[in-house]
Length: 297
Image: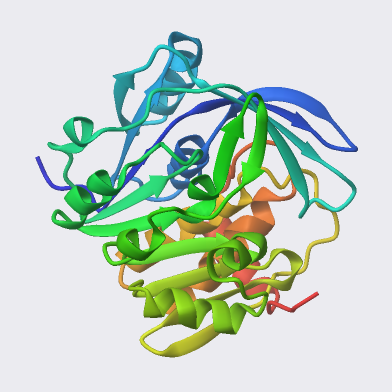
């Protein structure tokens, strides 16, 4: 069997979403949002490895029905998140009402791909040993968010990443938002933070800055990716995962850093217009890119 271009590894969750405009229950997690984001693109080179309880198997079967290959590691429970947003959708508070089993080296020993994207949700999802193992098999991409979340009772607390200095030696691509980058580096300046993270070993540093777009730091150069115009934001849940899906998809097909960032930003613009995951096509993304230049807002 041909080695996949991208393998996303992460839990599918049950999410309760609360915003000023809606309250809803739906599947979620990086694995869910990345899989659905790539479903409308050419997903022939994509594979998903997830771990869920029986309660979320319907979400797995729905993804399989869309033609995506999914491998499942059974878990006693699925992750259950409550995500609450205020008027400013860049701000989110969370509770964790249940946790799934973490991924282990034994779970990952036979996984193959050119790019592994680890959708971390909680600090113990992937051990340092798991990252080291995957780095021997391909490019490792990590969303930092989960490593900076510690659950005490039901509440989620911001923490620093205990193994960051060692782990980042084995991570090729790292995504963080503005709060996460400050937790990791101590700097609120994204340019300084990006240089620090690159100095710790990351080859490509992606910092998403909400309405202010994103920056990519790679090969000693910065690429500024403005946000595309958007008049009405409905639901920001999964926006960072959509960004990573678009970026890795574009990069896996040979795009440069800036073009991949613009493709990712356009996907986010489409996703923000509705509840749930990105449900467009590559043609839709290209249309957004062609219709308007990105502008910082």
